Amino acid sequence: MTLLSRYLWATAGLSGFVVVWWLATVMTDLPAYLLPSPGAALAEIWEPSYNWGTHIWATTQEIFGGYVLAVVIGVGLAVLFSWLPALNAALMPLLVVLNMVPKVAMAPLFIVWLGFGIVPNMVIAFTICFFPILLTTYRGLLEVEPDLINLVKSLKANRWQIFLKIQLPGSLPYLFSGMKVAAVLAVAGAIVGEFIASQKGLGYFLLAQQNALNTSAMMMALAFITLIGVALYGLVLGLEYLVVTRKGIGK
Amino acid sequence: MTRPFVRLVGVTKTYHAGAQEFLAVRDVTLDVEEGELVSIVGPSGCGKSTVLSILAELQAASGGTVEIGTPDSPFTPGRDVGMVFQKALLLKWRTIIDNVMLPAEILGLPRRASRERARDLLEMVGLSKFADAYPQQLSGGMQQRASIARALVHDPKLILMDEPFGALDALTRERMNLELLRIWRESSKTILFVTHGIQEAVFLGSKVAVMTAGPARMAAQFEIDLPEPRTLDVKTTEKFGNYTREIYHLLGMH
Ligand SMILES: Nc1ncnc2c1ncn2[C@@H]1O[C@H](COP(=O)(O)OP(=O)(O)O)[C@@H](O)[C@H]1O
Ligand SMILES: [Mg+2]
Image (cartoon, rainbow over all chains, first blue to last red; front, side, top):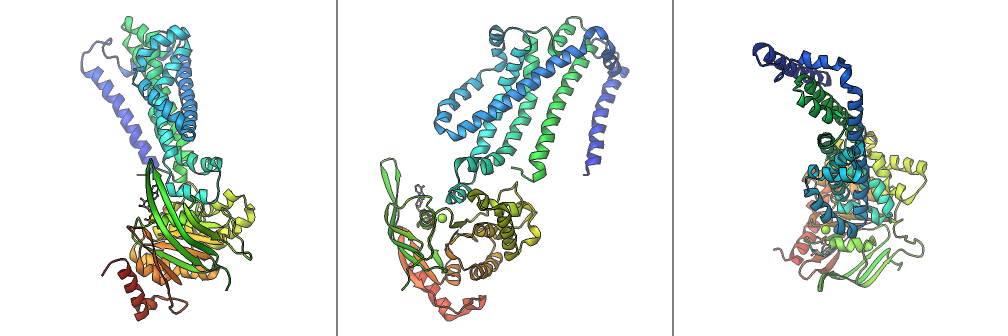
């Protein structure tokens, strides 16, 4: 299938979804507070009292901030673990156990420690997407053919050369599969954080509108959250295309 | 008589697994003249790869003597070894020529000269057209040729090949055997060729060292006296049949 026809089909699928939604509002007499029409939801964009900009900006910062933090720390730790097996042996079991703790359940604790605002929600997004990145990258760094290591060691390659020329580029496909999983998790993490305690952000806005049964505004907030997630995912895909797919490295 | 380029005398290797000791190979005694192609043949697990890794200084022998190089042609570990394995082990994210360049990069050799040499080598292995292709665009045989070019790019004195054609189909394998003999003649390298194919060992080597398993040791050596340059016709000669039969017997196969 050509790229163009794939875009066309994707667009058709999305439009179809909106049309079905619209038909559902026209053909049934569901009240608007249960299912507002797409048009009614879209019209909420122009309501100035909603302060969309503030909420979108807050949520975007939390998602991207937590995500970037998770990539930096996850990859950094994975590299350290691959260099220092003792460190890996000491910390990996601990991290696996910590990963079992539901991140959502830790949110109240983060709020106690870090107060209200963007930072605790960023941290929740971070904790929820850090582990998959660490794990996939670590695996990618170790997944090297033993004979390839023998080959370069027979040339007396030093550890740094082995890392830069073989391990790191070899781990990129793994890193990106972790980053794609994490992109979805980061969005969930930030929103859940906002649910628990916050004064701005799209998650906060959702709860506030729920009390008013303002379903159309909630729909629009969901659409914005989705757009932020899609933007993040798209960025990751673009980056993956540049450094992995274009060079023909897949797993 | 001149000194051989590689001299192994009574080499043993013991692996330790906890308190357990495991004698992987013993009695490895072998001379390889400079510019000679010697085959090592034996069943899997008899220690062939272990011998090569000792020569490549990937691990030390537990006993015996290992000498490589002569006064006229000194040997520098790291600098003078080229290795080829059963898998081509090309880096997927590098073009063929950049793969061939890898040893030159690791050794810090001058870039431009190495690149020129890499091009020449690709020409020699018949891959000129694929210099800028990525490995996965090449067939298994072509990938293995690229890995041979990679083993030669830093102009090492000793080439160690560990079952390099073991994963190829029978026809490609025969073609690669001929190709290797040509490359060997053109480059006049000293080559140690490990295989578990008896026919392949006899066809390629001017000498064949036979290793047996349980106990793993070097059991015998045969000087292979066949007409040079060797062609596939050699395989139909009586002499060739006699050599292979003798080795089969030695390995306990009748
Ligand atoms: N690093 C190692 N630790 C322990 N045993 C090993 C190691 N490498 C090889 N061996 C053992 O030594 C023997 C010889 O192995 P190897 O040299 O790979 O044989 P071959 O290449 O002829 O198949 C085998 O029994 C193998 O299991
Ligand atoms: Mg082996």
